[in-house]
Amino acid sequence: MEQEKKKARLSILKRSDHNYLIPFVIVVTTLVALWLLFFAHNSVLNWIRATVEVKSQEKEMARLQSEIDRMQQEIDDLRNNRDSLESFARDTYHFAAPGDDVYIVE
Image (cartoon, rainbow, N blue to C red):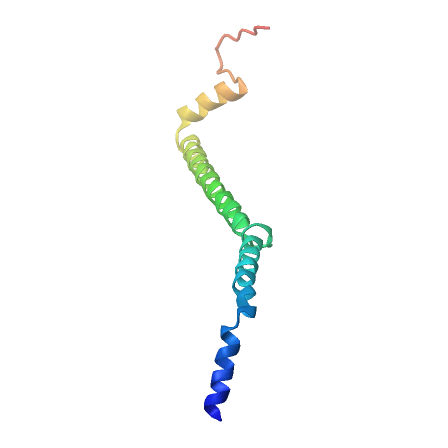
């Protein structure tokens, strides 16, 4: 009796009616993969865009940090060196020392 049931189950699986299952699984798997790659909220394309954005932001942060370091060095020079402070004031604000001749060119 058991063997007959097993044979019946095997014969059902061997029938050609079930040949539609493999193409169906392939189509569904392909559709799910395409959905995950392109259309889902956390798709691969969004992940790649985010990675590129993070790298560009890290480059921008490094550039700004180097600019901050340069400005901090300039501030330290202006605080500690009177000659550099005087030179900065003359160049930036057009200051003149007593006794200098000032020419205004328009």
